[in-house]
Length: 228
Length: 228
Image (cartoon, rainbow over all chains, first blue to last red; front, side, top):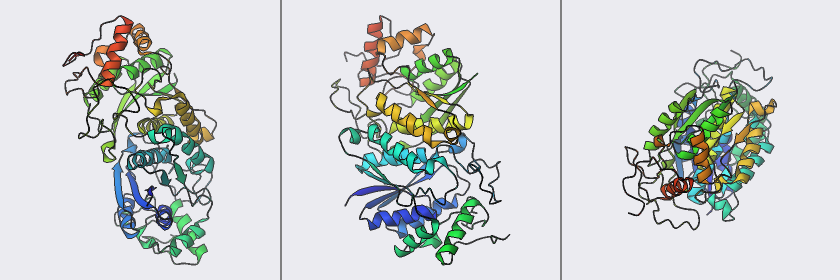
């Protein structure tokens, strides 16, 4: 069985990606990053998701990105936007987050002698982040194939982003067909310790709209309704 | 004054790079990564170097790469090669290290609104690491310019590697001309807690040969001679 490193946030998208990677026959090494995010219950969710979807191993690596600041997700003094107004790149953008996470996945992939990394990057229902675009992923893959001992030895690395062009509705349908238990996932940017979602941040809005479009009940636990 | 993020390991090369960045008029934000390296005295050296060369700020970010293993620099059960035999990529290679460090520098640069990153990467007297080659740095820069909010807004990021094509001798001469105090730097892969070098690992060998070629005494403290 081929090994793959799967970036697992604990959210809906990466859970779906893990299910896809397993379905494609990969032995999955799930990697979560404890980067000082305010929605830390997402890490508990990641553990449950990794176990429920049969990851061979799950590693949480700690890296305190709040050192650098600059994001509402790591800086407790900044507010998470809840207005639903989606113009421009929002305050929840974490500088270089995907670059850092993919770099960590690359390091683990190399030590595992794996040539496959899976990431739940999506360019449709995303929040306007630059590092979620296909041209960015292509550039990362190109760089990665110059970066490693494995690459020099001719073992090409592939970054799989199976959700890139799927609307949230189809992501959910794909996951349900692969038996993903979405009640285990946490999407909210400001989930409480128990994993209860706010219902009004961008991530909650995208999630609930996705479940609505899929015609399926969202099993997430909300501490206030979306109308609140 | 323009701001630059300077990757600072505590070794000879990155100290020289910090001096060059300062000399070019940059306000310098030095970044060191505590990645679980066995030569931890290099982090103390980095602090001293940052202070002595007038960095505006010095940040040490912790990231335990020993989680992934695969390198003699982070895995205490692997031996650091000391034979001087330089065929192939040595056991001291840390998977994806430069990719991770540049990614962290990119994150800090973005929050500082800096468009300049300096790194002491060198393709001449290096130890055969794939992520020290000019084509790798170019690919990283290209990726970085698709990764960030700043890049989307048209602010181009440059990765400066002023040592790329310099032999160690010239690096040392450049640094001395800029008043770098090399007695503060630690190059050894297995320096002890006091910063004393082994004298026989690849990094020590390259350093001592460089000082010899420059016709200058190496101010490093060695716990055994190179002939030992």
